[in-house]
Length: 138
Image (spheres, one colour):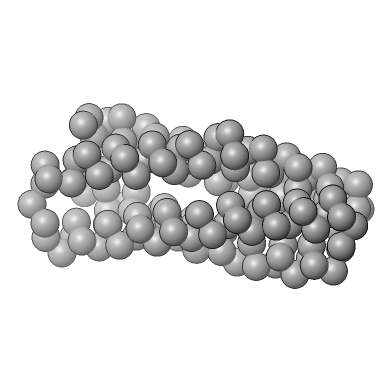
């Protein structure tokens, strides 16, 4: 597997997460109609862009794992990557739950899930940035 392709996919994933954070910031708290638009938009991006990127990055990284000696630095990078992947899978599920609550008009549940989704989104970003930073050392 080409390390450049893996880096390009990882960069696209990071970019996707940052763009999602921007439209969250732009639409959240601007009224229920805007929050419903936000929930629908975020779910579409997760389903059609972020989830495929997550899978592609994981497969590309997995295909390269035997090309490098396992040392403490690589093990730490893999731990950050696993954190990002698992937290992002959880976030995608939370985004879908938040959408379901918004479409049903269950705004208290929407807000509860929204809060959790943003906390886990920060974990995703931490994992991505940790893995990417350590990836620059290889």
